[in-house]
Image (tube, rainbow, N blue to C red; front, side, top):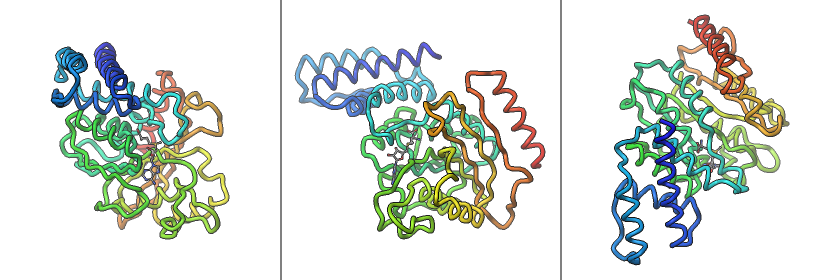
Length: 328
Ligand code: SAM
């Protein structure tokens, strides 16, 4: 599998380099064009002859059907990471694979294998997290209806490419997700939330979790918006700063969560994933309150070890199994 991912990544990278050299565009835009070439295997008529031939040779070198959806996701992810390298905009960060796969595991444990459901990521970026979660739900790929929303034009294009490359259907919204979304509430929300201040104070006025003075925290507004678009009894899995409750808005956030949700779990991501302790993140699990829902007997708490440490990870998974047993 590793070898095939590498081959597909190399193809994407080489083709992207050809395109950016000729067309003088940023790497990520070239990557969108290279991926489209891979999917549609079609060239525009008006290309300069040498360039046309080079691209034609590239097309002939690859057969997409030899690669599974996970291989395609991973190869594209490697190319996106290459394109994002050196960019300073923090919001361009893609959710790491390990985190996506772990959330995928959690979603399956909470929702069960045989239950069809709807899934939404309101800050979907390149949709790497969305697909890492989806590709974990082996037994029922066909019956998960998925949605993603993203404001950044390049990232939403990469999200489209990700879906097309994997031949999966996702309904995307290219918009500010903190404005109303034309979407019925879903069963599951997963999102690696953008952290920081939300600049649009007028839109923030519609939120209970708005700041009284200055800009509001976008991750707080995202939590409120996600709960709004979740069905009663539905689950939410967020990647949040571990310091979520260490700011002057914490009381407001806590009482909002208490009113509308059950706090189900807080799992600290491995220390080794972050440069500074202050940047550390956690997986935060909520259930939206409904008629038949109740607080868990115990909140699921864990400090996750490095994902590379198989033994320690096994230990944590056993603890989680125990948690699920006790909650039955
Ligand atoms: N999970 C994504 C992935 O795997 O590529 C990465 C998510 S990234 C941490 C957070 C995303 O939120 C960024 O892509 C950013 O552009 C997006 N974002 C920030 N503010 C937004 C807003 N108001 N509406 C929609 N998306 C927003």
